[in-house]
Amino acid sequence: MGVAEVEGSTVAEVMASAVDRYGERFAAVAATCKVWVDAEPARPASVVPPGSEVALLPPVSGG
Image (cartoon, rainbow, N blue to C red):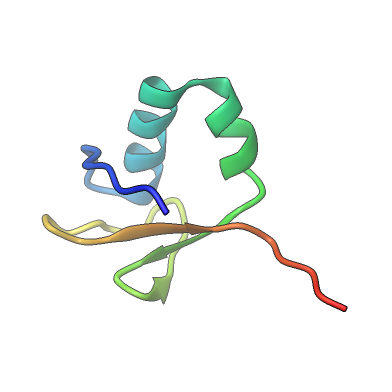
């Protein structure tokens, strides 16, 4: 699990900042993930209050 502080006031802004920092490989993986803010599902327009946790949850499969 990785942790980083990234600027942005919405999920879209946070993701854009993360892509700027980590590049296109990150963008490709992030595109497959669900985004949660403070343990709640979020959309690109969702507000990210200062100090919030934004989590990317990759798809999982089981058997």
